[in-house]
Figure: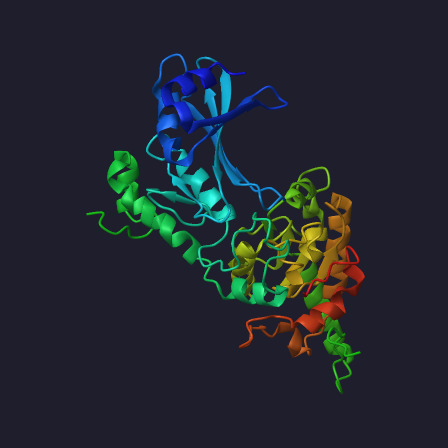
Length: 206
Length: 201
Protein backbone atom coordinates (compact mmCIF):
# COMPACT_ATOMS: atom_id res chain seq x y z
CA UNK A 1 0.00 0.00 0.00
CA UNK A 2 1.32 3.40 -0.99
CA UNK A 3 2.10 5.48 2.17
CA UNK A 4 0.51 8.51 0.49
CA UNK A 5 -2.89 7.00 1.30
CA UNK A 6 -2.38 7.29 5.03
CA UNK A 7 -1.13 10.84 4.63
CA UNK A 8 -4.23 11.64 2.56
CA UNK A 9 -6.52 10.21 5.25
CA UNK A 10 -4.77 12.33 7.87
CA UNK A 11 -5.14 15.46 5.74
CA UNK A 12 -8.63 15.01 4.27
CA UNK A 13 -10.40 12.57 6.60
CA UNK A 14 -13.72 11.32 5.28
CA UNK A 15 -13.17 12.68 1.76
CA UNK A 16 -10.88 9.72 1.18
CA UNK A 17 -12.73 6.49 0.47
CA UNK A 18 -11.45 2.95 0.27
CA UNK A 19 -7.97 2.17 -0.97
CA UNK A 20 -6.86 -1.06 -2.61
CA UNK A 21 -3.75 -2.44 -4.19
CA UNK A 22 -4.20 -3.39 -7.82
CA UNK A 23 -2.75 -6.62 -9.19
CA UNK A 24 0.22 -4.79 -10.65
CA UNK A 25 1.12 -3.43 -7.20
CA UNK A 26 -0.13 0.10 -7.73
CA UNK A 27 -2.34 1.67 -5.11
CA UNK A 28 -5.83 2.83 -6.02
CA UNK A 29 -7.51 5.38 -3.77
CA UNK A 30 -11.11 6.55 -4.14
CA UNK A 31 -11.82 10.20 -3.47
CA UNK A 32 -15.14 11.99 -3.00
CA UNK A 33 -15.92 14.05 -6.10
CA UNK A 34 -16.29 17.51 -4.44
CA UNK A 35 -12.80 17.26 -2.92
CA UNK A 36 -11.01 15.66 -5.83
CA UNK A 37 -9.28 18.76 -7.12
CA UNK A 38 -8.04 19.73 -3.63
CA UNK A 39 -6.73 16.21 -3.10
CA UNK A 40 -4.94 16.22 -6.45
CA UNK A 41 -3.44 19.62 -5.78
CA UNK A 42 -2.25 18.40 -2.35
CA UNK A 43 -0.71 15.30 -3.94
CA UNK A 44 1.06 17.45 -6.51
CA UNK A 45 2.39 20.13 -4.17
CA UNK A 46 3.13 18.43 -0.85
CA UNK A 47 6.83 17.66 -0.39
CA UNK A 48 7.39 13.97 0.18
CA UNK A 49 4.55 13.08 -2.20
CA UNK A 50 5.20 15.33 -5.22
CA UNK A 51 3.08 13.58 -7.83
CA UNK A 52 4.08 16.16 -10.39
CA UNK A 53 3.29 14.16 -13.50
CA UNK A 54 -0.26 13.46 -14.62
CA UNK A 55 0.17 10.38 -16.80
CA UNK A 56 -3.39 9.97 -17.98
CA UNK A 57 -7.03 10.61 -17.27
CA UNK A 58 -9.58 8.07 -18.31
CA UNK A 59 -12.94 6.72 -17.24
CA UNK A 60 -14.38 3.28 -16.62
CA UNK A 61 -17.96 2.15 -16.96
CA UNK A 62 -18.74 -1.37 -15.78
CA UNK A 63 -21.17 -3.77 -17.33
CA UNK A 64 -23.00 -3.85 -14.02
CA UNK A 65 -25.33 -0.84 -14.36
CA UNK A 66 -25.49 -0.43 -10.58
CA UNK A 67 -21.80 0.29 -10.30
CA UNK A 68 -20.70 3.89 -10.50
CA UNK A 69 -18.79 5.30 -13.44
CA UNK A 70 -15.22 6.00 -12.41
CA UNK A 71 -12.95 8.81 -13.54
CA UNK A 72 -9.36 7.68 -13.06
CA UNK A 73 -6.28 9.87 -12.66
CA UNK A 74 -2.90 8.19 -13.14
CA UNK A 75 -0.31 10.11 -11.16
CA UNK A 76 3.43 9.61 -11.11
CA UNK A 77 6.07 11.14 -8.91
CA UNK A 78 9.12 11.46 -11.11
CA UNK A 79 11.48 12.26 -8.24
CA UNK A 80 10.29 9.38 -6.05
CA UNK A 81 9.50 7.00 -8.92
CA UNK A 82 6.14 6.12 -7.44
CA UNK A 83 2.72 5.76 -9.00
CA UNK A 84 -0.71 6.39 -7.58
CA UNK A 85 -4.16 6.03 -9.08
CA UNK A 86 -6.90 8.32 -7.89
CA UNK A 87 -10.49 7.42 -8.69
CA UNK A 88 -13.67 9.47 -8.50
CA UNK A 89 -16.91 7.52 -8.45
CA UNK A 90 -19.92 9.08 -10.14
CA UNK A 91 -23.38 7.58 -9.73
CA UNK A 92 -24.84 6.93 -13.21
CA UNK A 93 -28.19 8.53 -12.37
CA UNK A 94 -26.58 11.78 -11.23
CA UNK A 95 -25.00 14.44 -13.37
CA UNK A 96 -21.66 13.19 -14.69
CA UNK A 97 -19.48 16.14 -13.78
CA UNK A 98 -16.17 16.62 -12.02
CA UNK A 99 -13.89 19.61 -11.54
CA UNK A 100 -11.32 20.15 -14.25
CA UNK A 101 -7.65 19.85 -13.28
CA UNK A 102 -6.34 21.89 -16.22
CA UNK A 103 -5.40 24.56 -13.69
CA UNK A 104 -3.08 22.01 -12.03
CA UNK A 105 -1.71 20.26 -15.11
CA UNK A 106 -2.01 22.01 -18.47
CA UNK A 107 -1.64 18.62 -20.12
CA UNK A 108 -5.00 17.58 -18.69
CA UNK A 109 -6.72 19.68 -21.35
CA UNK A 110 -6.86 17.11 -24.12
CA UNK A 111 -7.14 14.17 -21.71
CA UNK A 112 -10.30 15.64 -20.23
CA UNK A 113 -11.64 16.44 -23.67
CA UNK A 114 -11.16 12.80 -24.62
CA UNK A 115 -13.08 11.59 -21.56
CA UNK A 116 -15.79 14.14 -22.34
CA UNK A 117 -15.96 12.93 -25.94
CA UNK A 118 -15.93 9.20 -25.24
CA UNK A 119 -17.86 9.01 -21.93
CA UNK A 120 -19.87 12.22 -21.70
CA UNK A 121 -18.33 13.27 -18.41
CA UNK A 122 -18.26 17.06 -18.21
CA UNK A 123 -15.37 18.86 -16.56
CA UNK A 124 -16.34 22.05 -14.76
CA UNK A 125 -14.15 25.09 -15.49
CA UNK A 126 -12.43 23.39 -18.39
CA UNK A 127 -11.21 26.20 -20.70
CA UNK A 128 -12.19 24.51 -23.98
CA UNK A 129 -14.48 21.54 -23.43
CA UNK A 130 -15.44 20.10 -26.81
CA UNK A 131 -15.05 16.82 -28.66
CA UNK A 132 -11.54 15.86 -29.63
CA UNK A 133 -11.65 12.47 -31.38
CA UNK A 134 -15.06 12.55 -33.00
CA UNK A 135 -15.94 15.63 -35.01
CA UNK A 136 -17.80 18.38 -33.26
CA UNK A 137 -21.12 17.86 -35.02
CA UNK A 138 -21.11 14.13 -34.16
CA UNK A 139 -24.64 13.38 -32.99
CA UNK A 140 -24.61 9.69 -32.09
CA UNK A 141 -23.55 9.99 -28.46
CA UNK A 142 -20.51 8.92 -26.47
CA UNK A 143 -18.95 5.87 -28.11
CA UNK A 144 -17.31 4.22 -25.10
CA UNK A 145 -20.46 4.15 -22.98
CA UNK A 146 -21.91 0.70 -22.45
CA UNK A 147 -25.30 1.58 -23.93
CA UNK A 148 -23.67 2.77 -27.16
CA UNK A 149 -24.07 0.19 -29.96
CA UNK A 150 -20.79 -1.01 -31.46
CA UNK A 151 -21.69 0.20 -34.94
CA UNK A 152 -23.14 3.50 -33.78
CA UNK A 153 -26.76 4.55 -33.56
CA UNK A 154 -27.34 5.53 -37.17
CA UNK A 155 -27.41 3.27 -40.20
CA UNK A 156 -24.27 2.97 -42.30
CA UNK A 157 -25.92 4.96 -45.10
CA UNK A 158 -26.78 7.77 -42.71
CA UNK A 159 -23.27 7.76 -41.28
CA UNK A 160 -21.74 7.95 -44.76
CA UNK A 161 -24.17 10.68 -45.75
CA UNK A 162 -23.35 12.78 -42.70
CA UNK A 163 -19.62 12.17 -43.12
CA UNK A 164 -19.66 13.18 -46.79
CA UNK A 165 -21.77 16.23 -46.06
CA UNK A 166 -19.18 17.45 -43.56
CA UNK A 167 -16.79 20.16 -44.59
CA UNK A 168 -13.27 18.76 -44.07
CA UNK A 169 -11.89 22.22 -43.47
CA UNK A 170 -14.33 22.76 -40.61
CA UNK A 171 -12.48 20.20 -38.51
CA UNK A 172 -9.49 22.47 -38.41
CA UNK A 173 -11.02 25.89 -38.16
CA UNK A 174 -11.12 25.89 -34.37
CA UNK A 175 -7.50 24.75 -34.26
CA UNK A 176 -6.66 27.78 -36.31
CA UNK A 177 -8.65 29.86 -33.86
CA UNK A 178 -6.70 28.47 -30.94
CA UNK A 179 -3.47 29.32 -32.79
CA UNK A 180 -4.85 32.82 -33.09
CA UNK A 181 -5.55 32.87 -29.36
CA UNK A 182 -2.01 31.82 -28.59
CA UNK A 183 -0.54 34.29 -31.05
CA UNK A 184 0.94 36.61 -28.44
CA UNK A 185 2.62 33.74 -26.59
CA UNK A 186 4.40 32.39 -29.67
CA UNK A 187 8.13 32.91 -30.18
CA UNK A 188 8.92 35.97 -32.30
CA UNK A 189 10.17 34.09 -35.37
CA UNK A 190 7.01 32.01 -35.50
CA UNK A 191 4.92 35.14 -35.09
CA UNK A 192 6.77 36.68 -37.99
CA UNK A 193 6.10 33.68 -40.20
CA UNK A 194 2.42 33.65 -39.26
CA UNK A 195 2.05 37.33 -40.00
CA UNK A 196 3.57 36.83 -43.43
CA UNK A 197 0.63 34.58 -44.17
CA UNK A 198 2.22 31.15 -44.13
CA UNK A 199 -0.96 29.75 -42.55
CA UNK A 200 -3.36 32.26 -44.02
CA UNK A 201 -4.67 35.29 -42.29
CA UNK A 202 -4.75 35.09 -38.50
CA UNK A 203 -7.40 37.31 -36.92
CA UNK A 204 -6.32 39.94 -34.35
CA UNK A 205 -2.69 39.45 -35.32
CA UNK A 206 -1.90 43.10 -35.85
CA UNK B 1 -31.07 -9.33 -59.35
CA UNK B 2 -30.32 -5.87 -60.64
CA UNK B 3 -26.84 -5.48 -62.03
CA UNK B 4 -25.44 -2.20 -60.79
CA UNK B 5 -21.82 -2.99 -61.47
CA UNK B 6 -21.66 -3.92 -65.08
CA UNK B 7 -19.07 -3.87 -67.78
CA UNK B 8 -19.82 -1.01 -70.09
CA UNK B 9 -20.47 -2.05 -73.67
CA UNK B 10 -19.72 0.54 -76.28
CA UNK B 11 -22.91 0.02 -78.18
CA UNK B 12 -23.02 0.22 -81.95
CA UNK B 13 -19.47 1.40 -82.32
CA UNK B 14 -17.18 -1.26 -83.63
CA UNK B 15 -13.66 0.10 -83.42
CA UNK B 16 -11.94 0.30 -86.75
CA UNK B 17 -8.29 -0.49 -87.26
CA UNK B 18 -7.03 3.09 -86.92
CA UNK B 19 -8.99 3.79 -83.76
CA UNK B 20 -7.90 0.53 -82.19
CA UNK B 21 -4.25 1.43 -82.83
CA UNK B 22 -4.85 4.90 -81.33
CA UNK B 23 -6.48 3.34 -78.27
CA UNK B 24 -3.55 1.03 -77.89
CA UNK B 25 -1.09 3.90 -78.04
CA UNK B 26 -3.00 6.09 -75.59
CA UNK B 27 -3.66 3.28 -73.15
CA UNK B 28 -0.08 2.04 -73.37
CA UNK B 29 1.25 5.46 -72.46
CA UNK B 30 -1.31 5.97 -69.72
CA UNK B 31 -0.72 2.58 -68.14
CA UNK B 32 3.03 2.98 -68.13
CA UNK B 33 3.20 6.44 -66.64
CA UNK B 34 0.81 6.26 -63.71
CA UNK B 35 1.44 8.80 -60.99
CA UNK B 36 0.18 7.44 -57.67
CA UNK B 37 -1.34 9.61 -54.99
CA UNK B 38 -0.64 7.69 -51.77
CA UNK B 39 -3.35 8.02 -49.14
CA UNK B 40 -1.75 6.01 -46.34
CA UNK B 41 -3.62 5.79 -43.06
CA UNK B 42 -2.41 2.57 -41.43
CA UNK B 43 -0.07 -0.41 -41.66
CA UNK B 44 -0.86 -0.85 -45.36
CA UNK B 45 1.07 2.37 -45.89
CA UNK B 46 4.19 0.63 -44.53
CA UNK B 47 3.81 -2.06 -47.19
CA UNK B 48 3.14 0.67 -49.71
CA UNK B 49 6.44 2.32 -48.75
CA UNK B 50 8.19 -1.03 -49.11
CA UNK B 51 6.63 -1.37 -52.55
CA UNK B 52 7.89 2.04 -53.51
CA UNK B 53 11.39 1.42 -52.14
CA UNK B 54 14.29 -0.16 -53.93
CA UNK B 55 13.68 -3.87 -53.28
CA UNK B 56 10.27 -4.01 -54.94
CA UNK B 57 10.43 -0.67 -56.72
CA UNK B 58 7.18 0.07 -58.48
CA UNK B 59 9.03 2.67 -60.50
CA UNK B 60 9.68 -0.31 -62.74
CA UNK B 61 6.05 -0.03 -63.80
CA UNK B 62 6.15 3.66 -64.60
CA UNK B 63 5.17 4.87 -61.12
CA UNK B 64 8.45 6.66 -60.56
CA UNK B 65 6.98 9.92 -59.41
CA UNK B 66 4.71 9.91 -56.37
CA UNK B 67 2.33 12.80 -56.65
CA UNK B 68 1.58 14.17 -53.24
CA UNK B 69 -0.66 16.69 -54.91
CA UNK B 70 -3.97 15.26 -56.11
CA UNK B 71 -3.94 17.74 -59.00
CA UNK B 72 -1.03 15.89 -60.55
CA UNK B 73 -2.01 12.32 -59.80
CA UNK B 74 -3.58 9.49 -61.79
CA UNK B 75 -4.05 6.73 -59.22
CA UNK B 76 -5.39 7.20 -55.72
CA UNK B 77 -4.02 4.38 -53.57
CA UNK B 78 -5.95 4.20 -50.32
CA UNK B 79 -3.59 2.22 -48.08
CA UNK B 80 -5.29 1.54 -44.80
CA UNK B 81 -8.54 1.92 -42.94
CA UNK B 82 -10.64 4.99 -43.50
CA UNK B 83 -12.49 6.53 -40.55
CA UNK B 84 -15.62 8.57 -41.14
CA UNK B 85 -13.68 11.66 -40.15
CA UNK B 86 -11.50 11.19 -43.23
CA UNK B 87 -14.37 10.36 -45.60
CA UNK B 88 -14.88 13.96 -46.80
CA UNK B 89 -11.12 14.31 -47.14
CA UNK B 90 -10.67 11.36 -49.50
CA UNK B 91 -13.76 12.43 -51.43
CA UNK B 92 -12.28 15.91 -51.84
CA UNK B 93 -8.93 14.47 -52.93
CA UNK B 94 -10.69 12.25 -55.45
CA UNK B 95 -12.67 15.18 -56.79
CA UNK B 96 -9.50 17.24 -57.12
CA UNK B 97 -7.74 14.63 -59.26
CA UNK B 98 -8.00 15.32 -62.99
CA UNK B 99 -9.34 12.74 -65.42
CA UNK B 100 -8.30 10.09 -66.27
CA UNK B 101 -8.08 8.74 -62.74
CA UNK B 102 -8.22 5.37 -61.05
CA UNK B 103 -8.45 4.14 -57.49
CA UNK B 104 -6.73 1.18 -55.86
CA UNK B 105 -8.21 0.06 -52.55
CA UNK B 106 -5.32 -1.55 -50.72
CA UNK B 107 -6.00 -4.02 -47.95
CA UNK B 108 -9.01 -5.51 -46.22
CA UNK B 109 -9.94 -2.37 -44.26
CA UNK B 110 -10.03 -0.03 -47.23
CA UNK B 111 -11.94 -2.62 -49.26
CA UNK B 112 -14.55 -3.70 -46.75
CA UNK B 113 -13.91 -2.24 -43.31
CA UNK B 114 -11.92 -5.32 -42.37
CA UNK B 115 -11.92 -6.12 -38.69
CA UNK B 116 -13.12 -2.61 -37.85
CA UNK B 117 -16.85 -3.19 -37.99
CA UNK B 118 -17.51 -0.32 -35.62
CA UNK B 119 -18.96 3.15 -35.27
CA UNK B 120 -15.92 5.05 -36.52
CA UNK B 121 -14.98 3.28 -39.72
CA UNK B 122 -16.13 3.49 -43.32
CA UNK B 123 -17.10 -0.02 -44.45
CA UNK B 124 -15.16 0.01 -47.69
CA UNK B 125 -14.04 3.10 -49.55
CA UNK B 126 -16.19 2.13 -52.54
CA UNK B 127 -19.06 3.68 -50.58
CA UNK B 128 -17.19 6.99 -50.94
CA UNK B 129 -15.29 6.85 -54.24
CA UNK B 130 -15.42 4.43 -57.19
CA UNK B 131 -12.73 1.74 -56.90
CA UNK B 132 -10.99 0.02 -59.81
CA UNK B 133 -8.81 -2.59 -58.11
CA UNK B 134 -9.21 -4.16 -54.69
CA UNK B 135 -6.03 -5.64 -53.22
CA UNK B 136 -6.81 -8.18 -50.49
CA UNK B 137 -4.57 -8.81 -47.53
CA UNK B 138 -4.03 -7.54 -44.03
CA UNK B 139 -1.80 -5.87 -45.04
CA UNK B 140 -1.06 -7.06 -48.59
CA UNK B 141 2.54 -7.93 -49.30
CA UNK B 142 4.32 -5.68 -51.80
CA UNK B 143 3.91 -8.44 -54.39
CA UNK B 144 0.17 -8.18 -53.81
CA UNK B 145 0.14 -4.46 -54.42
CA UNK B 146 2.30 -4.89 -57.52
CA UNK B 147 -0.15 -7.49 -58.79
CA UNK B 148 -2.93 -4.97 -58.20
CA UNK B 149 -1.01 -2.36 -60.15
CA UNK B 150 -0.54 -4.82 -63.02
CA UNK B 151 -4.27 -5.60 -62.94
CA UNK B 152 -4.89 -1.87 -63.21
CA UNK B 153 -2.54 -1.77 -66.21
CA UNK B 154 -4.61 -4.53 -67.76
CA UNK B 155 -7.81 -2.62 -67.10
CA UNK B 156 -6.41 0.60 -68.55
CA UNK B 157 -5.23 -1.22 -71.66
CA UNK B 158 -8.79 -2.40 -72.25
CA UNK B 159 -10.33 1.08 -72.19
CA UNK B 160 -11.57 2.85 -75.28
CA UNK B 161 -11.54 6.49 -76.25
CA UNK B 162 -15.09 6.08 -77.53
CA UNK B 163 -16.43 5.19 -74.11
CA UNK B 164 -17.21 8.65 -72.83
CA UNK B 165 -18.83 7.25 -69.69
CA UNK B 166 -15.45 6.23 -68.36
CA UNK B 167 -14.27 9.79 -68.05
CA UNK B 168 -17.43 11.40 -66.68
CA UNK B 169 -17.09 13.01 -63.27
CA UNK B 170 -19.47 11.30 -60.89
CA UNK B 171 -20.74 13.90 -58.49
CA UNK B 172 -22.83 13.08 -55.45
CA UNK B 173 -26.54 13.54 -56.01
CA UNK B 174 -29.09 14.98 -53.60
CA UNK B 175 -29.05 11.83 -51.44
CA UNK B 176 -25.45 12.63 -50.58
CA UNK B 177 -24.51 8.98 -51.14
CA UNK B 178 -22.39 7.45 -53.87
CA UNK B 179 -24.09 4.08 -53.54
CA UNK B 180 -27.52 3.27 -52.17
CA UNK B 181 -27.56 0.67 -49.35
CA UNK B 182 -29.06 -2.00 -51.62
CA UNK B 183 -26.28 -1.47 -54.14
CA UNK B 184 -23.72 -1.89 -51.37
CA UNK B 185 -25.41 -5.14 -50.35
CA UNK B 186 -25.14 -6.40 -53.88
CA UNK B 187 -21.44 -5.71 -54.32
CA UNK B 188 -20.46 -6.68 -50.80
CA UNK B 189 -21.50 -10.32 -50.87
CA UNK B 190 -18.01 -11.62 -51.62
CA UNK B 191 -16.55 -9.44 -48.89
CA UNK B 192 -18.52 -10.59 -45.84
CA UNK B 193 -16.23 -10.77 -42.84
CA UNK B 194 -18.65 -12.53 -40.56
CA UNK B 195 -22.21 -13.76 -40.62
CA UNK B 196 -23.23 -10.64 -38.69
CA UNK B 197 -21.52 -8.05 -40.80
CA UNK B 198 -23.46 -6.10 -43.36
CA UNK B 199 -21.64 -3.23 -44.93
CA UNK B 200 -24.83 -1.28 -45.51
CA UNK B 201 -26.71 -1.61 -42.21
